[in-house]
Image 1: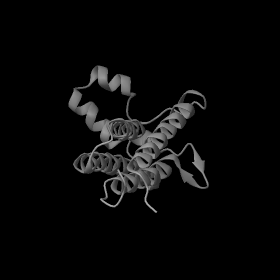
Image 2: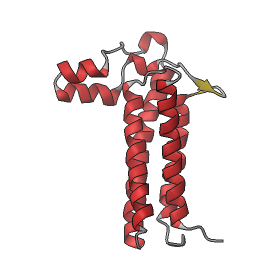
Image 3: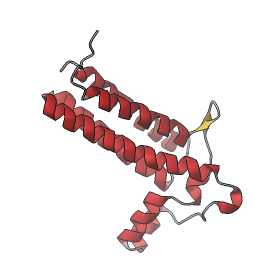
Image 4: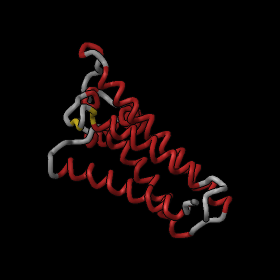
Length: 164
């Protein structure tokens, strides 16, 4: 039994859309404000979804499947590394958690761009706060699991035995 790469692209696109939809729901309906690492992870979900959408639309040949699968895998590795960093921050003892920083709006308006991006990518004390759990796992834990699953799907989409 063979699976089509188009189904995999559709799965990745639908998964990223659902994950982003829930992220915005939790932000605007539940009132959970995203920290800098959460926003960074959202960016990588968007990038992964965009590549999946383009691959779904253009239905690439084998070289294009390697490129699209590779890009999606790279974006999932990057997003997963930020999710892992946030999981690590959440696991730190209270006395080792970095201090909370200013809001993103303040950082991008008042700090040099390089410093604002460094804070965005490294996270701060806000990123260590656990405000939501499901089955004992925080949102970054679930995000890490999602990035691993999406990355595996991206790799599978590029395998030669997968139908075009």
